[in-house]
Length: 270
Image (cartoon, rainbow, N blue to C red; front, side, top):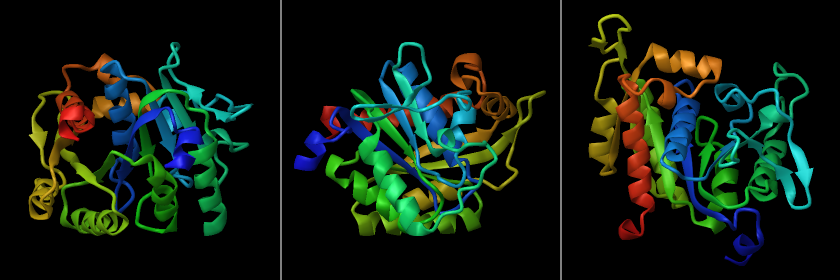
C-alpha cells in the first residue's frame, strides 16, 4: 500500500469500475449517470474515462471543448460543476481534433492508462467512477493492475437483455474472478423502450437476461434501465438528465443503482 499512499489517488475513498464484455451496451451512459446520481447524493465524484478509442463522456457532460492543464502533481481534471465537486479526465481532452482516431498499439495504450491512474490530481473524492473499453483485453488488465493498490470497491457490469450480450458479460464475470475484482452487481441496460407518448414499455431486445445471469452467477442484480428518449437526448446535448427528468422511467432505475453503490461503500457492508 506504500505506493498508494503517495499517489494522486490517496484522497479517493472508493473506486468503481464500469465493465462490459461488448461495446454498444451503454457503458458510458451508465458511468455518466451513476456519477451524476452520486454527485446529486452530495458526494464528491470523479470520472476516469479510459475508453481510449471511444471517449464519449466529455460530450455527455457538455465539457468537450475544455482543456486539461498541468500542475505540480500532474494533470488537473476538467471540472464539470462550478463547485469542483464533479470532475472528469478523458483522452478526449488530449486529442487535437474531436474526430481524431487513437491508432495505437497495446503498449502505448497501456502506458497511457497507467499514466491516467497515477498522474491525474484528483484531490479528495468520495468516488472515482472508471469507464473502461469493452472486452477483457490487455487494456483491462492494465487498468485493474494499476488500480489494485487502491483496493477498488468493485465493478458494475453492464449488459443488454439479449443472449448474445449476456454471453459476453458472462466472460467479463470470469475476468473479474481471475483478476480478483469484486462484482458489485449487474445492470441490464436498454431493458425495454419507453414510448414518449403513452409511457408504455415495449421489450425491444427481450427482457430479463441480465437478471437471470446475476442469479446464476450469485451476484447482485442492480436493476433494469429502459431505453428512454429523454435520456438519449440529454446525453446527446450534454444535459443533466437526473435533474431535468425526475418523472422519467429511467430515473428510479439509475438512482437505485447509485444507492446500491452507496450501500456497498458504507462501513456496515465492509
